[in-house]
Length: 381
Length: 255
Image 1 (tube, each protein chain N blue to C red):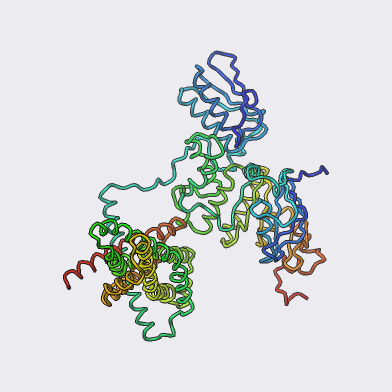
Image 2 (image 1 turned 120 degrees about the vertical axis):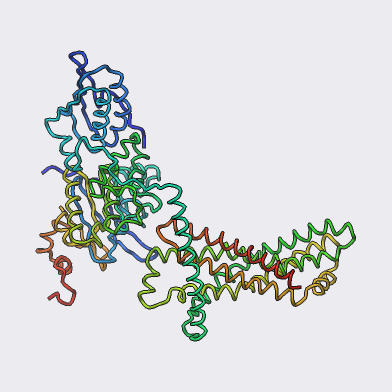
């Protein structure tokens, strides 16, 4: 908005007959457009005067609203601060009318509102502990609810929402293929390029193929795929379920006799468990293709020698190991995504927090479990 | 009788969603200082008409003038300047969820007036008093009941003392006591501040209490089928479906 052009004479003028006794004649409209400007001009002017009493004359005011009221309140406060007396001439009861509309009285100041509670360190710490404990309870009960629902589906396969599951598989899997393929291809390219710089010094060009194959199939393929899925689908699960939660759709499902976990979480978890290993497979293939490009064009390997070296080094164990890990990752991502969705409480910002939290916890869980697998494997072998 | 000032003029408005025509050739004048109720059965395009009147939706053809300025053809800046003089209460209140009630109401005040901080608090307090929500300054919208949200939304719509106030279903989903309190509040605002008020509703109590004039839309003709004083329309409209609406008769019971 354009700042109101305040012409002093447009809204008020100050006159005084005796020393120390002044009158402010207001005229025109004391409304949303003019009041703020008048306050800024008038109050310093009043403060500069040496006065004992001041009268606000409202008889020429054509219109006054609650912004004008604020002006009068500010004026009165300024006068009171100077220990002078304040009076009003308001024969047409302009201010009175607006006061009665607001059912407010002139001397009343705000601050009667209950202030936002603020507690000491101990209470806040306690609150955090209680909150974490209840979150943990929800977490455990959600694990139980998911396991129970899976058992239910196992016993009664008809209760699985097949259409939803297939739709979810398309969203989580098929639609993610291009981005997973691209990322993996580039990753394969980078790994083989970086390792070739070192391995070339020993004339061990061929081992670039082994390195790309082992690194991608047993470690990076599952992890990269899981991170992409966590970013794409984990957040989507949380946001979708969270929005359903705050708009009472989940309550509606519950009242209609559906188990929200069975209805919403199981299709998503099942779909993820099916498609994430497949995505991982794509990831492995494209990464090896990326390595192949570097091998052929920079390291002067033949296509057949690169591929035969890759096949030679990849054992069935490595492939199964990578795939099993990706199944675990899929469960973790979809589980935490649904959990964050169900935990959503509040409004639009809560949905945003749920989506963020789903991705962060998803990636954390992926890395945590991956390290656990790595440690376990080194002891096992 | 003096010629009444027209503050909003809708001229030959046609609204479509895709290929479906929602409103066909609507022309409507809103006069300064009146309480106009737009009514009609569910799905007749009441809310659509409201959206077009405040520039939230662009018509397929036709114009909407507010204070003589065509809001369908003007740029966003002009539209925003016009909208500053307009308060809107949305059907779902549309309070910003991450802000407290006081922050919601203070938002337009701090943005568009130069009031000092203390005065803004005071104004927010006055606005909340007006809608009888004092003491709820620091509540989040999610902590309020439906009726309280509606009143907080109304307080926000009134924040800058708009010349025109649009209310989309102000009493829907509220109990009769709160509904009649809101009706009373609407009349007070209209009387004392001279605010022009446009209400979209199908609450008959509200219509008979507050409306100076009603405009009834119809789903089949997609246009205005009745206009005028609510009581005389109820009793004398030549159109049976209009009388039916006002008397709450079911379709089959209409003789």
